[in-house]
Length: 108
Image 1 (tube, rainbow, N blue to C red):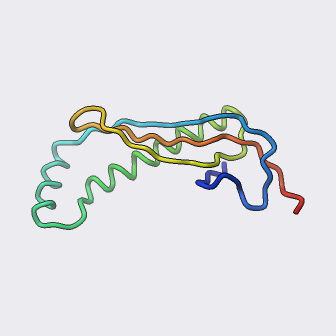
Image 2 (image 1 turned 180 degrees about the horizontal axis):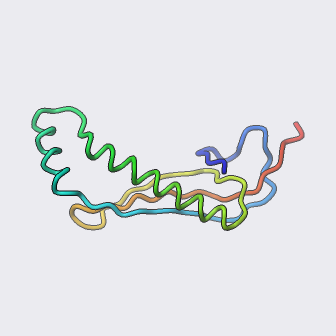
């Protein structure tokens, strides 16, 4: 499955638009990670525990979006975007969405 942030795929032509596909996950902070994050915050620098948690959330959201696109028999998902929103204190949603399309090689 091709997944791109651009509205098209170089060397390919969109032959059909199948619609919006999305994937999301909601993650809550973990007490153990919070303690380490507070200590890192005091010292300054990257909060690696949260960096890892958000990277995992993005990957899971992408995987779920791709599953939706595969169910539509799509060749690619174009114009992919991410969005986050706070659900409650300590929990946030990671949303990934784009347009599922069918492709064929460009004649140009």
